[in-house]
Amino acid sequence: MSKLTLPIDVMLFELRRSRTLGRIAIWFLLVAFPVAIVTAVHLITKFERGDEYVADDFIEPLGMAMYFLIPEVSCLLGLLLWATPAISTEIEGQTWVYLTLRSSGRRMVLVGKYMTSVVWTLSASLAAVALCTVVVGPTIGSELWWVLTKLVVLSCFVHAALYLLIGTLFYRRTMVAAVAYTVVVEYVVSFIPALVNKFTINYRLRGLLADWMQWADARSQAENVFGNEPASTHLQMLGVMIVLFLGIALYRVEHTEYPTQQEG
Image (tube, rainbow, N blue to C red; front, side, top):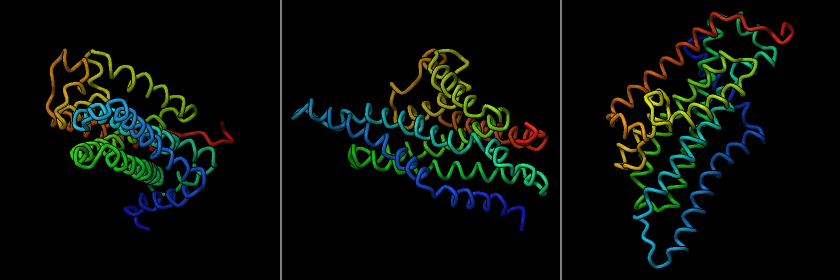
């Protein structure tokens, strides 16, 4: 078997294994959760406004809700399920020793699991974006759909690399470490008007949303204090994050002797 096909083989195997009732239910839940909330907000606003309701006037608040619910919540929940336990599941399943004995086995499995987490989460998130766009109306949501689609893709690729790195560093308390990072860094630090939040992923994604949609309210307080950055800078930083996180994760998994379940 060619080494170049191994990550794809791992991804196909993991996706076939995901076709269980529980995983399918989680996939539909990730789709239904943002759609249900956006629909409720849309209907309540329309009912309260009555004849005065104009859809164009509410595209920004609805769009902000869609952004928060999908790239910042649904994507992260799906990736927590798939990317974070990439190493711990193999150790617990007592298959890690077998993988380490194969040529480039560690790296190929890690890349394959990265691809699996991105494909699985991306499919649910893109479905949620499309359905939410239908709810708010295709005439006003077409541009929003395109912007959110790009943000979802970026969010999945960058966060998957980050959670994969966390999984290689904290293989004993993987989910605890990932959840703690998400809450403290992505949902607290990224909102603090300080220079440090420029190193968070969500800061970059919100900057792209503000630039692409021309929404001033989408900008964080840090941008108001330290100035706005162009979309190209945000894209470059996200690209650097993907390469950096994946590079460290691959180095870590190749040079770390993880204990087996029997040894642990």
